[in-house]
Length: 174
Image (cartoon, rainbow, N blue to C red; front, side, top):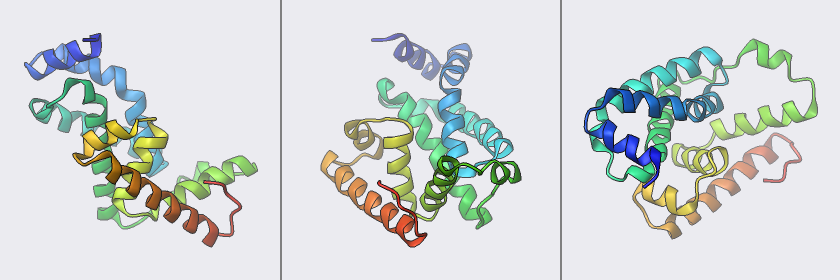
């Protein structure tokens, strides 16, 4: 059992210091996940606060200590999806638009826009797989479904993303 798993066990048992240390360990991952949805630092930081609260409140529901990071990222993805639904709009940071001069930055913006236009499950699978480098088996465990199902969903999500990018006239290889 690694150190993170020991911290998770302590946190589940009510050790607040262990929980805070875990949040400290994964705060960059949480920030990246939130930023991939909101593209706005303020909203991403607010999301981290809310997800920290939700995770603290529900830490006792963690079933498998080795999947704590996946559990935490899933809370973030669910929160972000809820916020996007609630707002029914895409938040675009003016600063980000001004820095979109290079082709690489433009491509990144196009991909993020296309991701936001996908359904929740597709966004979730693509985020877990490509933004957080989780393995298919970890995603399957997190989503409580067979690995084959995750592979099918991932394939459909990639096809859908490719279609969205082609609609925009982009020359992307996804």
